[in-house]
Image (cartoon, rainbow, N blue to C red; front, side, top):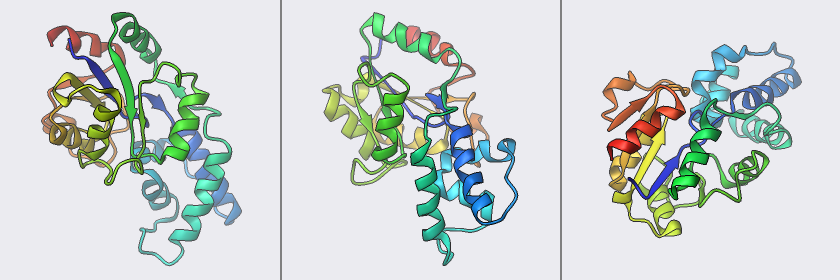
Length: 218
């Protein structure tokens, strides 16, 4: 059994897409634009602000308006970051299993800590979560190994004793760079990544509870 399981946040631990979409559409309304449908936004949630503004406004980070729009988007998101956000079905049961089995678990996300920590708290998980590592916690975010190695330092568990679960190819790259086992979450957002079968993850799960079978094999 692995000593620890680390989860990506958006699209892996929790379905954050509705609140991120609401923040974008509040921004679009402020700009006099029609809302973007959630079905179009959901796949790109893992790309954060860049993904949301790219779909909603058709701009990239080098556009002159990008910094101001990004700041306003984050303002809207911070004001309502856990209204419709929920754990994915089966995730709470999975976390309870980890707790009961004495397996440490934590969160490693590219979402900034100032959003990740209050979100985890609003989901009622802070007391159970061994670590919360944001995209600005370590020197470099995923796909670099830095955040995952920071989580290992925080929990006192070596990388080879950890599994990292994520729904984007950069999660798998980061996990492998850190020397961890990797699990691709096919139920997540997947984004603009290549097909999940090509990510070279150690396992692919279609539902959070499928991770139990992966744990048994380890």
